[in-house]
Image 1: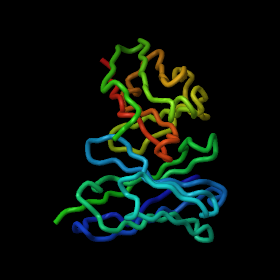
Image 2 (image 1 turned 60 degrees about the vertical axis):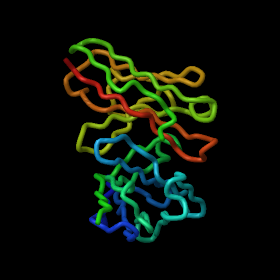
Image 3 (image 1 turned 90 degrees about the vertical axis):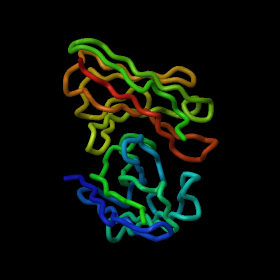
Image 4 (image 1 turned 90 degrees about the horizontal axis):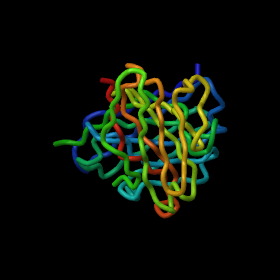
Length: 120
Length: 110
């Protein structure tokens, strides 16, 4: 079964750090671009970051540039999001997603999401 | 923050046709393909339409997409109770160098 499973969310104080993981199974992880998308409580979807298949190219939404780092370990079939200098406005469910099966921009597989709460 | 504008809500009775619009600009919809996602509250989004008008395997043909210039639309024909969900358009934005989602539309089946 093709699957993405996120982990690493939790409660963190403002200014703190957290690393999210996304474990992939059932497909050739190293062949696909991967993304992080977040959704604040009661709000819409916001794309956060993406990484190409070999990890050589990344991009970020402006609000997280310089604070978040996306990376991947193709040997471990795992995607990561290192989040530093966290702010209250980073509170959200974080989803990882795969693109490249139908088109490079269509996210066809999503994880179940992991909740990140930034609060003192 | 969303640069793709959708109506906040849409509704219809079972069997009716509902259309959702997505308005963008030359840097996103005008220069790239549009994808649509369905999200039932409390669950992960699901890819509904890719490349403007293509359906992934398993998506009923009641769902269709189109694009013209800097706008796109999603149509749901033969509306069913299970179609009650939030719907989002999305596209790459050349100016922002990132993907952008629409503001989202909540579809209610009356």
